[in-house]
Every structure is written in structure tokens, then in C-alpha cells.
Length: 222
Length: 223
Image (cartoon, rainbow over all chains, first blue to last red; front, side, top):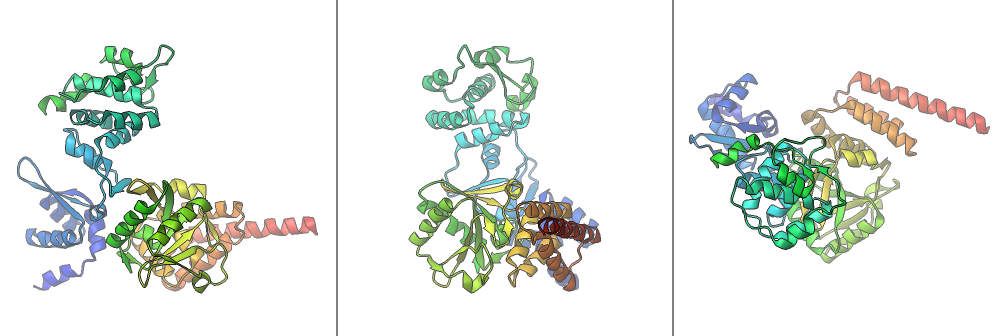
């Protein structure tokens, strides 16, 4: 009982800082012991209970039935992140950067797609291909893409997605309005990065594609 | 006291009343709550880029029954005081534009505000970086500000170079007392047992000395 009382003395903010990130119960025990907080399974569960009560813990179950705890102050905030939407809908998961939270709005796949496209990372581009499976508000997507001048990039990703997954059908209006004109120059999705695959799609949209076919392995298993 | 949940609700209510999209910056206790450094705050501090945006925001607050207060009560004769609005005995909101008493919320400060929270369609709040929170806390210099700085220093890794560079930047923006005021504030922190790196204090003193020399030179030229 004495040790139990001692645990109560641990400042919740210090605990949060120490354990921020993704953990299993055993990694939590290891970290606490490394930080000279003597912990066994029971104590670790109690400390997790304290963090959960404050709203800092989100739990996920893996396929092997193991629990993974995401510990972060941001879990307390009610809003959502565009990465949450992508991770809920894609086999390729993205590490959540808590740099943009949204409150009081409906989760929009279209907004998430444009947000991730702007991040200019290969993994983000791969992850958002899955969103075309559910995207059906093409007029909203066109409006958002036009605002950022990304219509051709969206069209390119849609055509790539169709090579590997079943998607909703893009409207003719979106396609016709987005296809490049003769005078348009080739553009990079990610600066100076292009693959040897998807040459037809590259020519159609005049966009250099940074994705290789081999990068899409996760979609084959999906 | 406003909790994080109440603050979120309030920002959503404000967003629903706003007639146009507004970007502002959370500073002080509000920023600290978004960064997980505080559980509640006495007042909500926001900085606006221009008067027009502040007026639009104030209009939304007035529609939510907030009433204007005299800022002299809280800030005395300090310059660049905020507009203060309060609803009954609940939350008080301080609206600055873009100077926070003796601190200019500079372009660098805006760049450092990387975390963003969007409420509904119209309200986008960027969260000031901890370094700027410290600098602004010294500018407002209210009773609770030292406690807040202590809790920031206890839990965040501070790059004192950023604070030094921003102080130089404030000098270049015409805030002649920036180095002196920060130096005095740092001394107060040390008195209550907060450790400040000696290198930083020495560098800050050099900046102050150079500034005095420059001023003397200018005075001699005029004289």
C-alpha cells in the first residue's frame, strides 16, 4: 500500500510527458522503470487509468489482440485532425502530426485529401489513394482543388487509385475541367521526384508521379 | 476560471456568430491550455493582425452577451492595451492588435505559431510558440504571469537563443526597452529561484550595453 501511495505523488503532467506516444503495457512498464519509477503490471494499469481519466489516452486493439495506447495531451481536445480521417480510411497509416485540429465541423474526405496532397510526402500521397473509394462530392473536391491549383494532381491520383482499388466514379465535369491544356507545362507533385511507372497517367495529366507500383503493396493485401 | 472544454465551446459559439473568416493568435493562458501546460485560465488572450478583424470578433462577442470593460482597471497606464470583454461573472476575453503592451507580435512570432485550431468554418486560432508566450508574459507582467512562466520552464525545453533573437528583433521594431525590461524580468525570476542560463543573461546584457552605446552615439550626433 505504501508504494501505491507513492505512485499518487507522480505529477500527472510529468507522467504525460514521460509516456507521450504509442505504447503497449510492457513498453510503459519499461519506460517507467528506466525513469526510476518502480512499476509492475498492476501499477502501470493504475497509472494508465489516471491518464485516461484526464482524457489523455486512446486505446487501439491490434490484430493479435494486443492493446496499443496512444498517450497525448491532444487526445483531450475534442477536435479531429485530417490525419485521423486518412487513418480511418486507408491501409497506409500516417504518423499523426498534431499541427491542425478542427472542431465543430463534419469530417470531410475531400478536405483531408487536399490537406494531405499539400504535405508533399510520398507516404501521404499513397495513403490518400484509398479515399477515392468513398469520395463522392466531386463538386466540393473540385472547388477545394481549384483553390489550391491542384486539380491535375487530384486527377492523377484518382487514375493511379483506379489501377489498384475500386473507386467511386469521377464526374465527367471534374475530369474535363481538370485535364491540362496543350499549353500547360509538366508539373511535379513533389519537387524533382518522378518514377518510371504510370507513364500513361503522367502524360494524360502532365504531372510527374513520385509513386512506384511497388510502393502500393499494402493496397494489394487490403 | 475557464476550462479547456468551456474554451472549446466558447470558440465554437463565436465561430457561429462570425460573419467572415478570421485568423488570430492565442497567447498567454489560452495558448498554454492548447499546449497542455495548464488546466484552466482566468482570461482568454487573443492577438489580431488588424483592427478590422478585432472589430468583427468583438461584434460576435457582443451578440453572445459579452460587455466591454475598461482596460485601465487591469492594465493601468500601460501602452497598447487590449479591448476587454466579459460575460456576467464568467470568462473575460482580452483582444490585442497586433501589439501586446510593450511587445510586437512580430512576423517571426507568427511563423513560430505552427499549431492551428479551426473552429467551425470561420475561426482559425494559431497557438503562439512557448518562446513568444514567455516574452509576452514579461510584457504584460501581471501577478500570475510569473507562475505561468515557471510552469513553462518546468515542462518545456527552451531555446534561449530564440528569446535573445526575438528581443533583438523587438529592438529593431522600435521597442527600445525590450532588452532592459526582459533583463529586469529575468532578475525577478532568478530571485524566486528560477534558474536562467548564465550565457543567456550575459548575452542579453551585452545586447543592452550595445543598445545604450548606440543611443549615446545618436545623442552625441544630435547634440
